[in-house]
Length: 172
Image 1: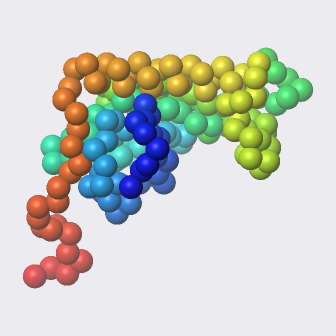
Image 2: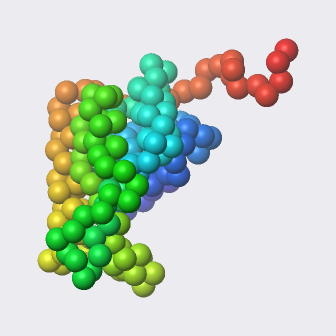
């Protein structure tokens, strides 16, 4: 149980996939929406596609606020104007277009993100940097999509599992 007053936002970072933890969260909390994060690789995009499909199932019906592309490109510190698309280019953007959900932005692959995480300082607090700009833009887009969702749809309810059909490991 959460205590501490009313929340404007509660962000829950889940591992990739469509497993038990996702269903448990959706059974425990009425989710306003889901943001799916993917890298540009084909395998990661397939997982992201499955994640979007899971949230959009009629029995689950959690609005997908959009898709973010992580590790979109690499920019070496000594060449700040260069972008190397190590894992592919615009994969999550194309997926968002295909699925007709908003593309919320992209995050670069930067050593400073890892270094900030290693010392417990969120990368988004790196003032005056490319990463701060990227996180600010994505945050604005998520808030915008949340406001749109809340003005267009009623509050989401926690899902109820009413049947275990298809869940058994043994065919009867």
